[in-house]
Image 1 (cartoon, rainbow, N blue to C red):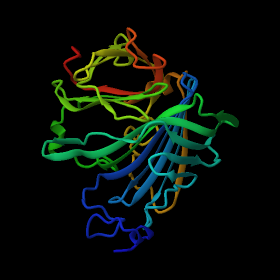
Image 2 (image 1 turned 180 degrees about the horizontal axis):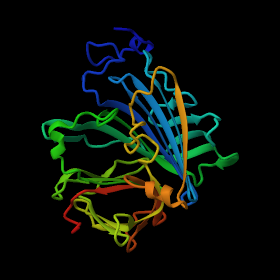
Image 3 (image 1 turned 120 degrees about the vertical axis):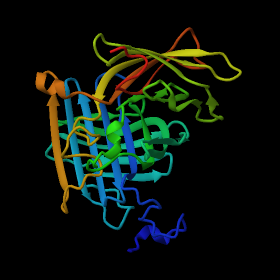
Length: 366
């Protein structure tokens, strides 16, 4: 057992050194997630940095979608003793003011993507409900997450072109999540081979001029709710619970690609209202980033004793590259209050529209 600098702070939660978590589950993780967009379909940048204490790994990725180009930089190293060290090769995250301001950096490298960005939260960081799922005797998810919308300042460089990022229209959302979810190398499935393979998911942090709506929906293969939340969060007043959210997506013919969707909210004691969601720039999160498609690069997967940095670029105009674009989608979303239901300010906002419709579900007949 080895001490680290974090042990000198009075923050222990268990009779362990701080770099050890209280569960031996291999799938424990602790991760940052950020997205960056100019409230348009011009560009979307997504960044993730994670630690996997029981696997001894720390890794990071950044993916940018600009026009037809899907470009990824990713890095991995051994975690080591100091969990306060948030650098992974050219990547690092700095907490300037907890729950408010952070800096995220990808230094210049040979893979055509770099950035130096400072995050400023526009609403209080908001704790989401616990995410818990036991399937065929195994706890698959047992995690917590905080969410926040905000704005960005800094620069992004893509293929030698530097873009100035200013907070007037460069918005985004972030989350911090920790707990148990599938990570690392694939395990023998055992009884999990009986898993129906359903993941019906919607996650929509919607940012408007003076408030945000945070909405989550997850359902199983019979349409039963596993997780749900809907709140309207203001910078300077108590958050408003919006009741059970309802979700009606419209898919492109013959696919599960969302063209538009209607979200309905019914706050207890208040007037129901609807928001139209339109994904305007998709980013396929499972392509190159470690979320699961590539057998040789998954979150928490040990890449050897030395730092490893890689770059991957795809062009969706090429049929073979376009065919890779599958799985979870994190899109820039345009959100519009319907029928004048906005509480104040502009009726149109932007944010993340994250969805996946995998496997059987009552809404699909095929």
